[in-house]
Length: 138
Image 1 (tube, rainbow, N blue to C red):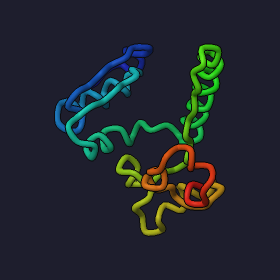
Image 2 (image 1 turned 180 degrees about the horizontal axis):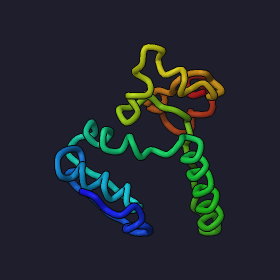
Image 3 (image 1 turned 60 degrees about the vertical axis):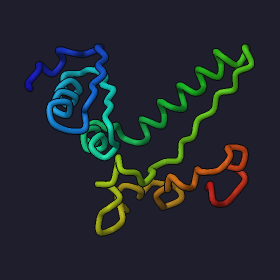
Image 4 (image 1 turned 135 degrees about the vertical axis):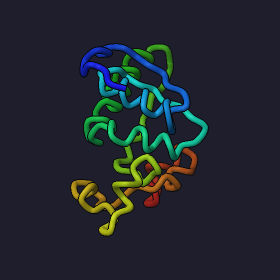
């Protein structure tokens, strides 16, 4: 499927079945044409393959999360809603397996990470109140 590079700029799309076949091709084509694309499927592995070429640099993505969190906290704080976000840095998940499952363990990707290591999803499997207090969470 070929679309003009900006033909879907500013549009939003939800593509189901995006882990393979037609759905995967459509999701990629829409993203390349400028659409904001949400993808879904029955399994995460294929979604990781579909999404990988379109992942923004980690710093930009985290900056957006921090900005959104601050905005929501400001807007909703008056109503008593507390807004928090976790920004653990590069986390070794299926979505970025191609970056951490390399001969050097993904060192090029985490070269500028202060802790010098990949975060692991299991490190966050605890009550939120304990996250900042334990060395396991750092």
